[in-house]
Image (cartoon, rainbow, N blue to C red):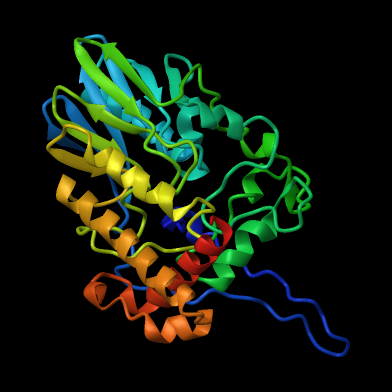
Length: 362
């Protein structure tokens, strides 16, 4: 999410509605992309601090660590971008191949380009990443779920959330390039055809020492993904995270309501709060991410945790009073956060997501 991404959102296609006798087929179309919702297009490699760099594809970012022994990446984005990045890295860091790729989580928009670096790199991920590639229906962003419970990934399961909540949810176009017979459905194995399987996995924490640098990998808990890795470049005191706590709606401020697609990605609010607290315990000065156009601080993480705690408390209190969901949407104003981006649009969806979450995870 936080899940809609510009380069996939641009592939939104009109799906035909059921035809009623005597009527011409209707086409479903998306509304225009809201101006300023995502970072503008463009690709560049920019310096962050010390030997840490960041490269972007619009509002999607990867991290780069430059060492005497080669390069370490966090994520690769899509295949086309990864091919561009490989050429640019060869120009800017000549003679330094990519030796490690840390896979932040298994969602396709951040990892599929990994195969471009498979000739030189080892791939490292949290153990849940491998589990998501084991042939079963994987964990996917927001309300992209196996709606018909058949174990296949259907185009409609990605498209319908995007029609229901345009530009906030879903991931239209994700199935098409991997659907060889064009029937609108693929197996989990086909979905991960471009995604490298990790060579090395860890459970809670892992430390890599490479090229004189120390890199800590931390699984914060289940939040947007169930296999996420936060990467701490210890020497530079820079933390790099992806989709949590800054999702794709975040630009130059973390004061942005989460997209709340589905009941917060199917993970308990308590796990989200635990994930925030895990990041707060880490020793760093600067947070950069897979989204967000500027660096952030630990205080920004604390604000995000406080939002989830406030939302949880407000909805729990309303539930204890016996209010219905529709009543909650009227009585829970979330007034302390009314200046956050996307407030008017996402306030009722955040309340609904919290309500569903607290009902499911008691």
